[in-house]
Amino acid sequence: MRKYAIITTWLIGFFAVVTSVQMQGCANIVPPSGGPKDSLPPYLVVAKPKDSSLNIQPKEIVIAFNEYITTEAIQENLIISPGIKTTPLIDARLNMLRIRINDTLDKNTTYSVKFGNAIKDVNEGNILKNFTYVFSTGNYLDSGRLSGTVRTAETGVIDSTLIVILHPTNKDSAIYKDKPLYYAKVDGKGKFEFTFLPTTAFSVFVLPNDYNKRYDDSTKLFGFLNTPLQISAQTDSQQLYVFQAHQKVEKKKASTAANNKNVKKVVSGLKYMKSIEGNEQDLLTDLTLTFETPVQFNDSFPIVLCDTLNKPLPNYTVSIDTATKKMVTIHYDWVESTPMRLIIPKRSLLDSNQNYIAKADTIKFITKSDAAYGSALVRVSGYQNMGHPILLLTKENKLAFSYPIKQSLIQMLKLPPGDYDLKVLDDTNNNGIWDTGKYNNSIKQQPEIVKKLTDILNIKANWENEVNVIINK
Image (cartoon, rainbow, N blue to C red; front, side, top):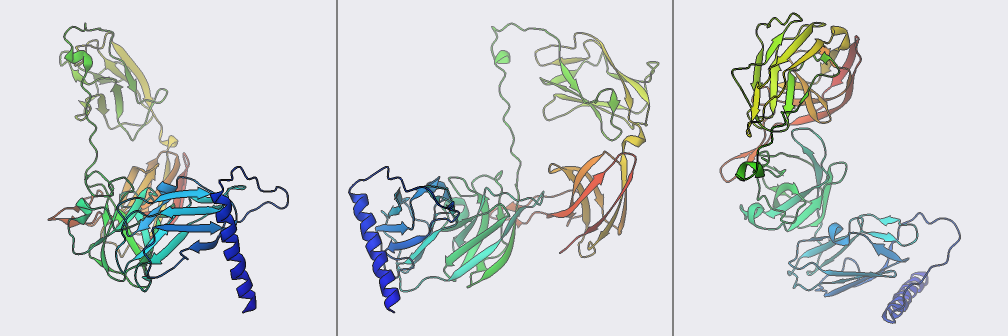
């Protein structure tokens, strides 16, 4: 007992001395150098009121650490739960952290002040990770915990810019109108955790960590649990998936030249980029011409796909995309190692300012050979517990190929060389594509789920590649 009394007396003395030094306004104190490199983060020595205090309504909290500290992006890291109206004033000097609270706190409520990774020591920058100070305005600390993971439904990847939000179950419109009582950040592994929660039921949502923290835009990433969740002392393994109900539509900028009648039209000829690499056309994709401005066809001078004798080929189509009107697509069932020509007549295309193809052009190219591609034999297991599984091959989270899984062996032909991430889509409505979710007053529909697999399919040219894929629950 005498040992603990001595330690307590020393801590109180230390706290008093540091406070006295701070009040005298000393600055630029440089700790002595030398000795082994410090690799340990700072830790709490004493706090007033002490950590985990009960029956208090503090206006000021002072925390002392064992060494000099500094803070970085503290307001971005700070989370006070449940939320209060006015953000506290926080001042860090020497080894002290002072928190000033201007709001009146709710009665019989447990408050946690989480600093994330904002606190670190001065010398080596060792971060005190996830430091939390907690107190209660009542006579006990809430003990509820909630943890889980968040993934993007369409890609299966993690987005660490998201937060998980808790709202009372008796407020159906809270996610649209109110800032959350409780929220937790999603980390780089997709995990989140709440502590010191009241053991009651909450509605659970996911949103981007923006200023509003509300579902005020259907183009935001959003996720939800179908039913309210009862919080207990250990509520684990909640899996949430986020989706965009609607894609963002970029507004078209008005053309200054088109709106100004005094601007003279400059005809310099339309310029375009062709999709052909070198002089080879991919067997699996369309040939495209991309322009800087929207274009339209001049039917009097059609674009023609020909053989080497300039004889038009049968069954090809030429079209302009309906969205931007800047891409001309030539679709054809390409045959390997075949020399061809695309004839683009003068004046075959016009833009909105009546600029046109000023000079006829003939693009000479040859289709790639089958040897430029690889094939794959994929053995799949664990798909039987899914309704309509589809194996997805993606590059940089963009879909390259998809194969419905109807048996344990899938033969894939003509795959361009490279590494493909493997994912599986649980296509619940069996329409062959991923479908997003919906959340409004009348419809609450979860998105279809894409699961990212650990396997990578490496394709080599002119080679049959094999891989075994296991789909876990």
